[in-house]
Figure: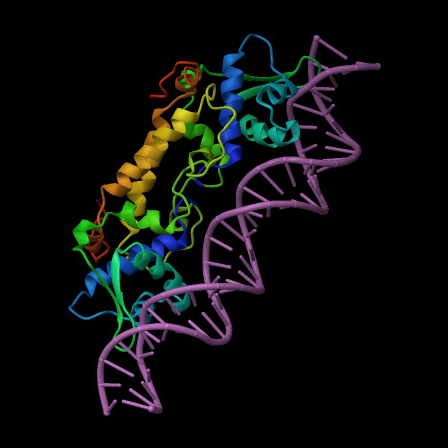
Length: 143
Length: 143
DNA sequence: TAAAACCCTACTTTCATACTAGGAATAACT
DNA sequence: AGTTATTCCTAGTATGAAAGTAGGGTTTTA
């Protein structure tokens, strides 16, 4: 499985924030209830989003989260990179991959590089704003 | 990780068979030694290839395996499909996936469908013959 | 008779995933 | 100042899949 629940939930958080955007901050409890996901689990996920400054947060009463850019400024790929350990399709393409002794005569390395590229390019081509328009009744599910 | 060792090893078997093709059958021991992979593990993998009739096998002395089509007739995708449990990037796209209660209003379903498609299209666009030309010294790793 | 594919069961080790639990710090409101 | 609602932080648990390893036995063919 290339995309874990963390990544998928992170996207749902972003979409939820985008769809319920006002001047106010939105509490995690609210998001968790709407999305029907454990608040505690979401907490660990949204923290990554805060840390990377893709959402703003405010502590204390009346606190919560909110986007700091418009939804079309966030690509899906940029969000998934924050939560996924790695989006690499094979181990040898991971960030801290041990140098493969077979590189140099490996017949499949460029295959995986190419696969990695089409995946990244696709994920970078879709924004949160694109996702907001999806999934309503009668929709044809075409991007 | 989208692609497991099973899938990667299956490709290496196919490439090995393609590169050492004669009229004779090639024994598993030979492949395992060249590829430096456990014979026992390869056995379980190549059995899937035989079962799907992408390679021919012959038992007994002088037996082994050999391709039954030319290398450009095998796409990478067709091989990986045999060994990978699933190439779906998310659980809801797997073959026997439980029907998702969120489908219908899910904002991300078409995203995953699109991702699935670019992955499959890419893997179907590369053949074993393409891989044979890769990875030699001085190569630029460009497909 | 030897070498090979074929078939089966069971076990281990390691790792990531998917959470859960409990508390500390902070900010608004009364 | 106190209460409450919230984020922030650290730690732990449970499960399952991946990646093999081990060791047999059966069948086929030169």
